[in-house]
Image 1 (cartoon, one colour):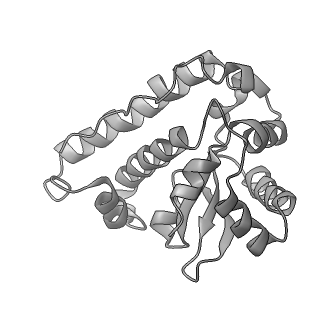
Image 2 (cartoon, rainbow, N blue to C red):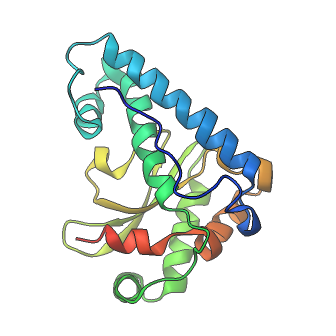
Length: 200
């Protein structure tokens, strides 16, 4: 199985008015994500044990295995970025009713959810991700993961909405102001319809 870079469902300039420039998307999607895909395919080509496996199977097989750390980094980042492009929308920011009710039930209010998510995203030291997840008991929570790790690997829950907090995802537009990038994501870019579609 050869993995491929998925096409964006919107143009490279579609998010510019909402704070994510065409330059950022061209660098992030076309260069960074493509590099993960290329490296992952190289690992698969050289390891018969990985051939024929799905991305999710490779993540499960390689997570926590020091000998496969390089494989996991590329596979995890490929999975994370597929999720991330879906988590962005030119019409983002509006929260549909079912998800809103779950957020209020789990966090107390939408504002409290956003505060918890922003804390996770801004306190992830170095590179990584912030996630809205649905736990095994059905409740929602917020978590953060380093580097290419994700809730699929850790088993913390189902990823509903993920935010890339590696510097390459925001430096062109926000320089070192990660908190502003996170707020902009939550208020104007986040595809909450996608998040709701991931609910069990």
